[in-house]
Length: 597
Image (tube, rainbow, N blue to C red; front, side, top):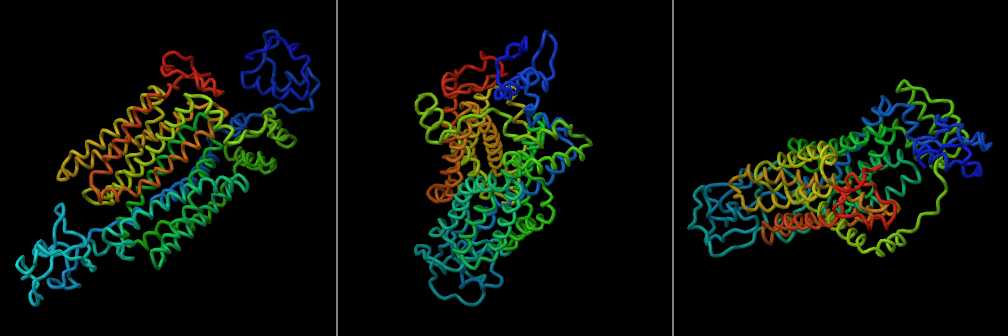
């Protein structure tokens, strides 16, 4: 219904039906009466004698009244920067606290504990070498007890055909302390304990998505955010006082379980009062802030080498921030959904005052006298997740797309986190490498929306995944001696997968029908979380064959790229509303479909 030529056409409509009619008219652009525009506030209700019923009010119309991005929104968004940074700290702190260290056997016959150096002239005579580095846990047996001048140790003093295990070590960086040397997690038999830290953290994050959503829906976004920061920061600080590996592992699980929902909550609070024209910019800015937060971790690690002090440096600011984050405004949409209209009005009036605007009397009266949820007509209760899934399985193409979507999410998450975690194993300074691997996410975040508005979704997704896969495999052919070339290829791989990740959020949401979109996208995302659980275990594969992790990343990215070609093109295509419409989306629809309304 794009227009109504005469008000007589609604003469038989009842007052109970007016709001859905008005909402449709508002959505389509208003009505006309004998060629002249009729004010929406009186167009239908006056004819039907329903003057007492306030016209439904779209929330974006309210944003126009208070200003779509004024001082109030800017202040709210700036407040949310800290939670985004704190979430980055929580997300990957284990990269440094559980970082493996370079070490070799302590040779008491040739050195003393006080001045032992990691590399010495006589070391090749006493310790076997692997890839130009001394072995970590093995040494040659000495023929005799050597005493006197340590510099006299030579090859003839050791039996290089008899290798023995050692239990005392000399570390390359004597100032560095992680749980590896603190809790004696050295040698191959303990590698699984180190990788388990990251996996436990990822499992907790997956559970936190559910718990955090339930809490924020019931008690509000603001209190969910403050509680997440408070509990997460407190548990992070307590973790710095762990007395053994078991205590550390338990706290590594509890901290993200109760504190890792900061990102989604802060994202909602930061963007909710931003107008539609500014939301793309705000979303990109959130991604940039998160990347800068990750890079900050590397900067802190440059100066803080003890894992206990490192955790304090990350989590103490979170507790301090609570002293001023309490001024954060609650979610207006959440307040309205709970019928707390008066509180919502107070926040909207504060926003209007800060932005030097004024809320209209009609808007204030609407919120004071109406249930905001009447904005849309009553609809039947949403079907359960399993009922929605059963509907998908009735359609062959939708079922295939769901499987491919889940696989692509798993691939993107695993490769994204896998490359980030592996960055600290590259040649050169591990902190610098980590900073670079996080900063390369920024170009993708900034350019994503620009590119998607000009190129097909499917081809963009294919190219980004394929480029990542090829670069991962090319990295394997570069000698480790060419460290800067090797690192450059690694960085470009991370840039490609970061860009692919951003596109995937948008693209996969567009291939599913409206009534199933949220649940199916959540399902793909949850399966994708398995990738973050698997990624920390990649060092175990490297113990089997060092190139194996990068080989896996490259192969699975290429495979995922080609499965994307099965998806339909959704650029400039009206989003499907039903499963039948989604089933009939064609693979080449980018060139032939009508523009999205």
